[in-house]
Image (cartoon, rainbow, N blue to C red; front, top):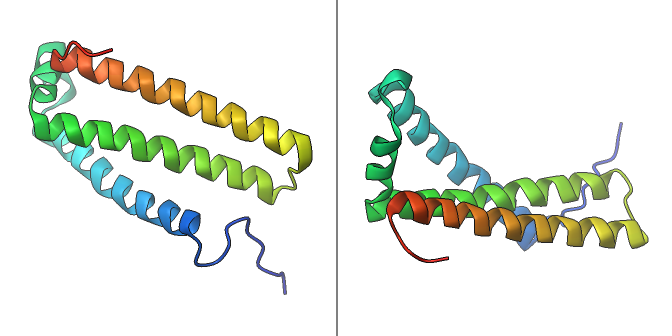
Length: 123
């Protein structure tokens, strides 16, 4: 039988965060598909309609939280998959910092986009 190997330490914080963000993403994706594919059909969705939703604080907050959790979940999953494949040493450090920088760029640009749609003048 194969042994269980994971870069996550069992019961650790990163293991828990990966599972919690997965659960959150499932709920938010279900909400997204319901709202944007069943309540409103693709031909009904417009930029103004999307901007109107983003002007609502609850929807804006949910989308920013979605951005943060999806970024963390994806980057953390990729990083740990690479560690599970044997990434070590300098390559591991370079990959880690590359993923961190890419995450920061993604989050900043995502918040800038959300602010533009919501009519918020920050960034």
